[in-house]
Length: 282
Image (cartoon, rainbow, N blue to C red; front, top):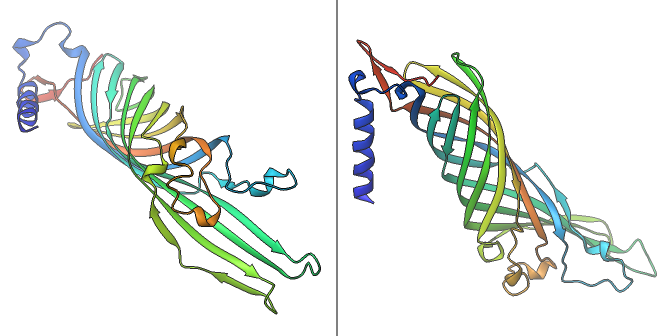
């Protein structure tokens, strides 16, 4: 690892000090960039198949289905950016870290058949937080050769699960103890890494805007990642469930994500014209 970092430093130094007398006709058509970006994200789910630890005696399986909420749990991401430009096109590799989440609710109710007003209701809010090492690669196209450069890009993303956790919030209403009592329990949090699939894959696309100032390129971009695979581990659905007592097991779901990031990149190729000027491919 140390030797690799030394090699990268030498490479950056060499490219930054490139002289104009070594340029070829294609020198000004390409540029290398290094940078970073970070921001926030929101997720939504597509249910592939539903599961429950309960089985309805009247054939009404919907009684035990979860109610999902989308785009309501904010996650974050941080990525490094490695970009190679050729004219208006660029190849971008942006490995980094991403956490995202989703939640759903279960509601169970007991009712006295003789006296329906005597009932007891339990509400479970189940919050999942997922952490990934992400490895997106995309092709970018820039539209203008001005200070502000809008762009679009598209590609694929592969991610490896780092950790997952699950938080259970419990509340309810007791109408069976001689009155009406609303209650809440202390939330319970547990590791849920074994319940999540080892990988997540997605197609990605997005739009952005570059702003070049001196030797820095600032940018803002928005991306959408369309998930391909089931993120639940079916092999541990019933065997390692930390919240089996709440009557819950994970459904098979496909997760997609929207993120917004701010970032900065630094050019590695310069023109020597009395002062070093970054190459802007054209």
